[in-house]
Image (cartoon, rainbow, N blue to C red; front, side):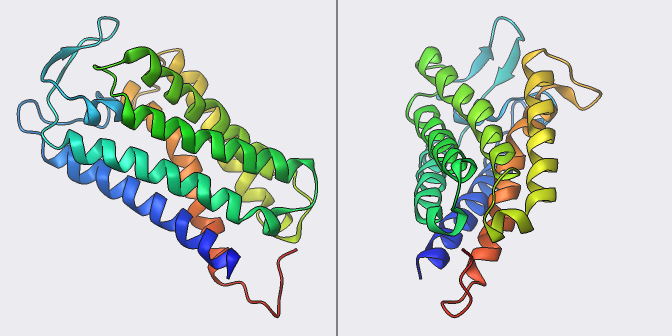
Length: 213
């Protein structure tokens, strides 16, 4: 039961985050939202205008309350799912690091949602850094795990962790590789949600008669 609850939390976090990105982006009219140009955080900005002196871009998000609520909700679900999944991910230090890092990344989303970038940029950036750094650290740690579940998912964890790490380095360096800086941010952020989707589905299929650890 615990594993299935963890899986449900992670799947709901991933689905809600992706749907909110699409729906909140489609609500933009002037300007139109661009996944290549705009950051994910732009969807949560509460005011309209030109934002970010280092990379100026027009921002006006009509559904920012809903987006910020999803930031908070998805972050809480990520963290709760990690805590509930701890037994399935054990034993070993790698599993502990995976859980702790996923909880920290979830906390980063909560912080970012409670403090939109144009309201409190410092706290918002702190939340984003937790997401970038520890969200991908969770995946790389998972690739080193010794439990049956983590060994089964090792190739997926390693690939997604390295992809997210590369995306983070390139995004922070403002290297867009042809997909825009906003596109590169998504390369940094989405691997964690891809991983919790795959792992969540595996946890939902688990049975008491066939424990994962």
